Image (cartoon, rainbow, N blue to C red; front, side, top):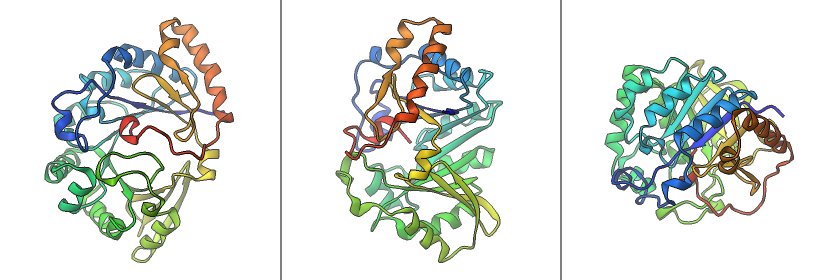
Length: 316
């Protein structure tokens, strides 16, 4: 099975910055010794690049909270097999990293989570009084030339009425892509409570809302995302389904958690312990073990139960 996309979830031990940028307070995790170090992460990325991985994305929690994140990003960009890099962030600390991001020589995309353009609604959804700050950071990034994409999780009765407005704003702002995402069946934190099917707006419903106002030009399906151009202009519009069988059949992604679990699928309990493998393998042996591990991807199937972990721990 072809594996070309690696998503790496980053976190650090809680520090005072968590209180300001993480929804509903900091995420409490184990000691730093249980989290993959930069050296371990880079060994894994180099290993995967040798067996075909071309794209690496850093997610969270919130990746910009990780100490010396810019160093990890720069070292990753030097790995020959890695052709492009992505970052998924809530944008709270984006302004501190813009110059570092612009110095990366390989294609770099920044996905910013933005579920609403309404300040009050933003605070209700995220628990953060940070709408103005994040919008200012986003605008500064666009002005300086960052390739920015927007991730909007659509919630029934909460923000689906904003879909056309977010597209119009994206066209005017100059983002490269606006991605509308079905709510995934994970256990969120804070006011939103437990996952509920009543909050989910499916791909076809999202598409219907968009078609009421815009002419769409199909670009095709890319894994779980179906993409369009609006009126033949940017941004690209993507709709990402959480449970698309077609997307699962074409999935070429793996994810690594902060503790070193290699997840074959977000909806499966099957994983491999990379931390143990790294500790007992030299670089050549590590590559061979990774080659053996990825074979299991083709046997993985979604499970019906809602996972016990939340997306705030493993990122977008």
